[in-house]
Image 1 (tube, rainbow, N blue to C red):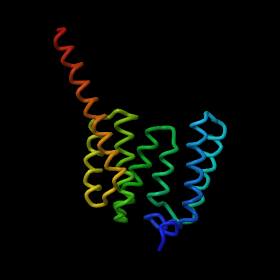
Image 2: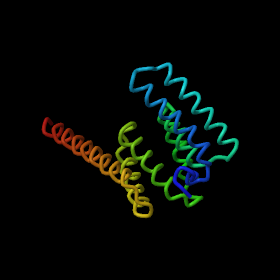
Image 3: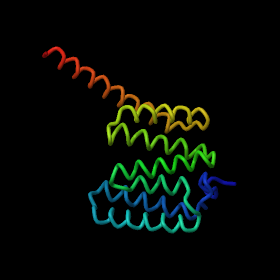
Image 4: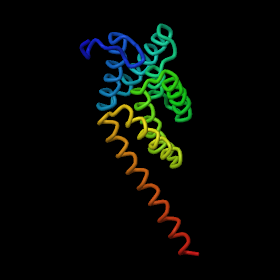
Length: 166
């Protein structure tokens, strides 16, 4: 089956997922040209389409993880991504496991700055990448690992400076 006809890894028809993809592109385009109203409108539409897809297909990792990407509260993002990861595990959905672990690692490293959780999810991502290789996600893993390593080194240096001052 040609790529453009394939469903998502968890079975959402390509035509249905194309609607989500187009709205995500609209949101990205609106943010790049500072069109806050257009971006907000596209975000509301995207969330409504995800609700519709969830009614049709049930709660699936692709739907949950995409919804998490557009939530503003990091705690809500975390909960929805963790739920999506559990679902992907129960479905043995290797591709979504990679994508969701990457999203969780990015959330912990870049947003909440939780170094322990960030490292845990980077390690989890590395395991998933061995099962389901993805070049872009491997590069993202390396980028996040460098950010985390830099943050840990910076924190250690600050603690050393504080000890020197005493």
